[in-house]
Image (tube, rainbow, N blue to C red; front, side):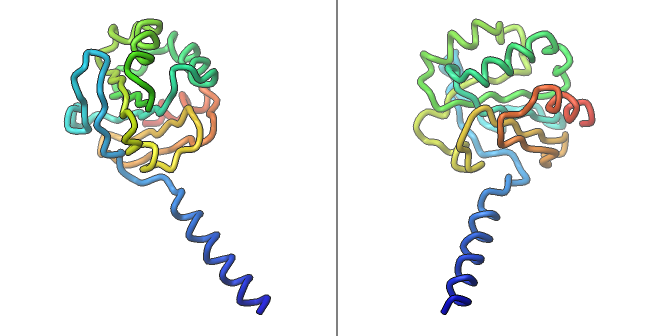
Length: 159
């Protein structure tokens, strides 16, 4: 009986572990941007690597990461940067303005609202979450725990 319970436990653990693996392709997002238009993966420039950042405008780790990112934003021009949140677009606009993201046309920033498609797709439990995809759309690396920005930059430089 103990062996059966142990085996069942191992199967459940394996199933849960594999369910949390990062999918190899970009999430099928649909986000409302700050200009009240919508963006999907089809709107991204083909053949460009993608950095997906799942964030919350009121998250201390997210704003700290953005503060570190701000001085190197020009180094990210070869990437499509997609920043997705679940909060109301009225909370996204001040964040967008604070970091002058309108000056970076390669940044797409918006909310998925209460659909939680992206959140569920990646099995997210905290923000920020960062996933980096190559120009062919294949996952290079995902940071599901609060990443050190220098580690993110090291990965970005290899893509």
